[in-house]
Image 1 (cartoon, helix red, strand yellow):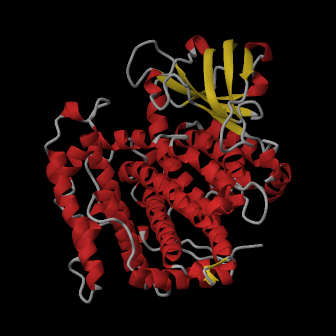
Image 2: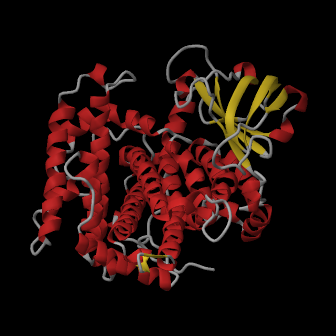
Image 3: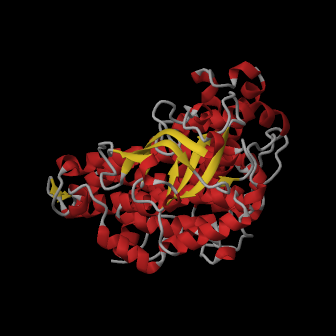
Length: 528
């Protein structure tokens, strides 16, 4: 909190992360690091985000966002050198955004004609304090998707008089993160700096975004964990009308719904992360939609919890001061890195083909993507595809649940509801004309991938529950609660939980809180 008030990164914490070797988490095992699976990486980083989102972004996620482009398209020499830099605790910045164009990378103006940089980038995390840069730049004046490339540049190789830093942009949240910009003026870059083939910058970005759009929301779940923990400390210690605030039905309902939101977000993130390992060619759809669902679900849950804390939610000191910082820091995830509407726009052009080839066929996904903790093959970066080519297996889960015998009646009703939603989407997406799926898509057209996102999130929850080996995850309570919350996203419910579900979730939540265990799917021990 003191570092945030000074608008600085928490220096002592960065030293702790250096001592742990956090950057090794972003380096694949074959290059000497600890990056084995995407779901494990997210859980490790979740511990950082749970304590301080500025650390999560400014220390970790910034380098991760840059690194996946190198793993996805870099040469063997570039990957080896890049791994050495990260393992030496060097920071890497992803130099992508231009305020004039936002997520419309095809219009980015920073140019690298003749291997000389000219132009500017804004809202870059760690632009000034990074040792190396992954730069997205125009390499052809022609319009289209083959006019940009990416470059890996060590700042020590750049003439310092050819680059200048822009002042930090003021921000409500993430105040400790350096969000500045950089200007290049006829700045030469090494001949071997290009990542991958010329003109493939957008393709590389779209492939690598599948990793970041999946992993970052999963990391950020740690923010809601601490938000819930803070709300529980407040409500169990505060008395209103002669009893603990936690005993008031309205308060219990908000807290239980936030817990259900956390579980559904974790299920969707984890299943998507495991899909990237098992079915990398099919992951472009869920990887975009998980960012769309999870970012808003987390923000909404924290906003509702703020009403539980009342006037205490914005107080900047005292026992509960961390909540207002988390709330401010969390606000950026709805648009930072990749805006939610950009995620929908990535999926919309694929929906007509999905409706034709996959949704009526009901091909089932592999069990391994739902079996938490089971081994996964190494992440096949070269197999990531920009499009799923009309293939989708995850959405088939709700329909398959209807064949289960002895299924909880409410769970069967909810599974049928999402199976029906997919049938309706099949018809609506099949009627879309090509001109309706481009950048000028209407809100009605964008609603199709938005509703599909709810179907896939429900599928992930059902799959995790179906393959659980016992304990709380095998109890239908949490999955009924998660699907109930998702009904609001498709306009077939209000998302509010009935009292019996609230009681069961609150019991589990309070038990974990007393035992110092996490509120996510794994319920692991929480230090401190």
